[in-house]
Length: 170
Ligand code: PNS
Image (cartoon, rainbow, N blue to C red; front, side, top):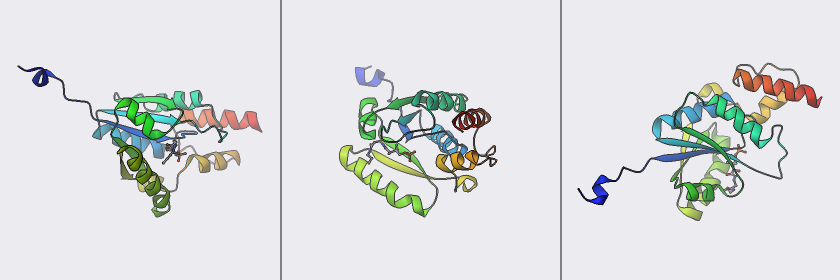
């Protein structure tokens, strides 16, 4: 047997990037579906210092880890820098993104083309489950801040963390 014959095939990796402030059931749906398509799914909490989050990056990571604990092939970490550099450093050839509606498309297309031009990384778009087509972390925070019910839109421990954080803030 030659050295190349004995080598294990490379793991198929993809990244689901985002701010995840906080993770919602819409994000989880995309991560769960990506975890069926790839050997390893990296969830990257991208750090944007110009954007003040409701949760710290470590808190977001903790919530995502709890939400994805049932998937054995999901790894969660933060990254400060370009998404293409995150991918390069980990040998990740594919970015998986959810597309909620046509309104997402323009910006997502720009980012996909920019990322591909920078490093050759591909972006795969997964149509969001229609149940979550209106869902975003920003809307969840806004509705929750005004006392609206978001219990069907985030995991229970995210709801608890959100309620507690908003109570402390008010
Ligand atoms: O959840 P969000 O805020 O919509 O996610 C946007 C995110 C974090 C995926 C995007 O802003 C990103 O990739 N940021 C990392 C910095 C970067 O690579 N910018 C160039 C994008 S072409």
